[in-house]
Image (tube, rainbow, N blue to C red; front, side, top):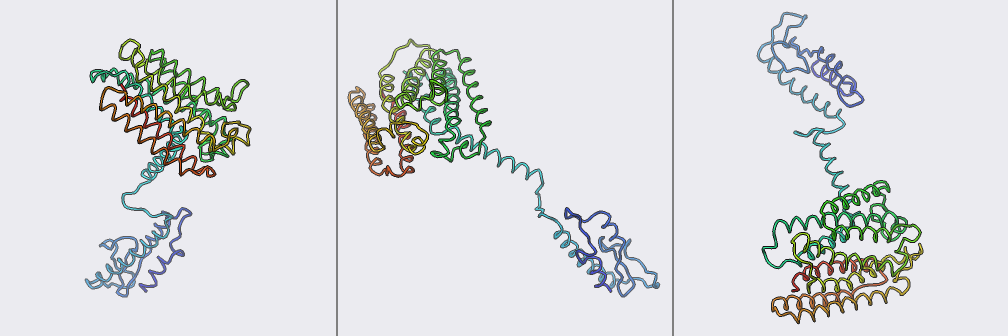
Amino acid sequence: MLRSSINGCFNFPNSCTLSKHGFVPWMEVQRQQQLSIQDHHGCTINPLRPPSKHIIKRTNFGSINCNNETKLSIYQNYSVLNERKNIVQRQSLPFTIEPGFTDDDDNITTLVTNLYKQLNVLYRFSRPHTIIGTFIGVTSVSLLPIESVADLSLEFFMGLLKALVPSILMNIYVVGLNQLFDLHIDKVNKPDLPLASGEFTMGVGSMIVSICCLLSFGIGYASQSPPLFIALLTSFFLGSAYSVDLPMLRWKKQPFLAAACIVIVRAMVVQLAFFIHMQKYVLGKPIILTRSVIFATAFMCFFATVIALFKDLPDVDGDKHFGIQSFSITLGKEKVFWLCIKMLLAAYGSALALGASSPSLPVKLAIVLGHSALAAILLMRAQSVDLADNASITSFYMFIWKLFYAEYLLIPLIR
């Protein structure tokens, strides 16, 4: 009778009916609590409550009292009942409850995961190799007016921060605007970009670009530094003229104008405007163009031209399809590639000559050895590029940006 009572009460799903959410209804629990199991001694136990003096009672079948042996049997039977009840309840749940786990923990984990994904998409939208170039370039040029350790004051670092933040924001505006107007081209040339892949909508991209532009001008104006504000205004105008598809604009369609936009911003504006900002409006020194800033401007004219030419090499297919007449299409990949290599080698040669003429032996060694090493690495890497493979060209293009960063580490040494 004990076995039949157990089966009658706990045989899933007949007696223990579950709700659509997988939980035992309260009314069903109450109903089962009225059930009892009678053993052959005439004692009864409640199957859902632990045996105690309240549930061990006499039946109406006689006046038999439960002795100790019977009570022990009841307790043993209860442990079997309780285990079977737990199995039924675990089977009814649509999920597993781990110790210490709550819905709040799950919500927080999901929120953090989504936030990380969105930040990663924003990071790729900002074209990080250009952001790094802006950060290193502005920092390097800002160090050129430094003449002693005393110049590395709180005012210097605050002035550097005032230059870096709006410059990076303007950089995001320029590259983001280009993605907005190049969406159809990027789907062919760069399908992994957030707008081309659909990770960002056009509305989200437009909002990011607008906010970055407004913040950049706001911070630049608040800094009360005319050269800094002029640098931001120039970057805004040339970046817009390069990308915006309006009459008299969309300069990227014209190879010379496209290259000029990049050279003016990367080679001239960054070197001269931020040097004067730091020298005059942060350190309070008279405006004097030093040997180092003149060299940096001339050298970066070569480097920025190479970047302007090389950036179109992996994009020939999409540019040709949409009528963008870049130098890579007009002259051919091979000619443009080796023209870029020769220009960089010429720039390194001029740096070697300048370093060799330095009166300081440490400066002479650093400049000569540093540029010799960079030139040698450039030649070795150039020999391994497969111009028929866009992935190989893109990899080498990112390598050129690394050379760009390395040059800005050497420029402050020139005195």
